Amino acid sequence: MKQPMLFFEYLFSQKGARRIYTYTEDYNLSCQHLCEKLGMRREGMFMEFVSFINDAEGNPIYENTIQYAILKKEWIK
Image (tube, rainbow, N blue to C red; front, side, top):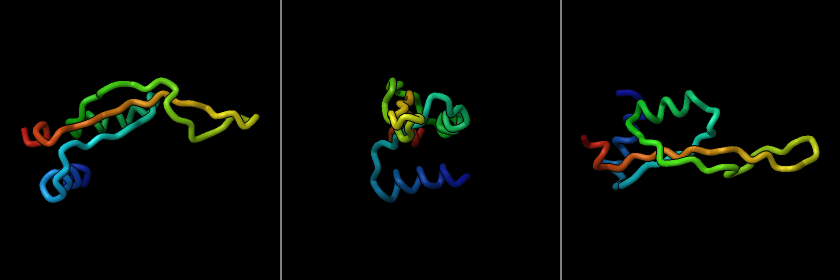
């Protein structure tokens, strides 16, 4: 079992997690592919959700962010 899968298993079985979720930018296709490979489902996109960088004038650059999630009952299947 690969490390992300082991981590999910640990969170669900040892830590009592009910739901695991993550955010990724809409242009980060490799992260989206990994989430889907791990069985997570795409829950939605947040338009201009958050900014971690600024343009040359110091204005925030907002990015579109996708949320993925998986429930414990989905993981067990």
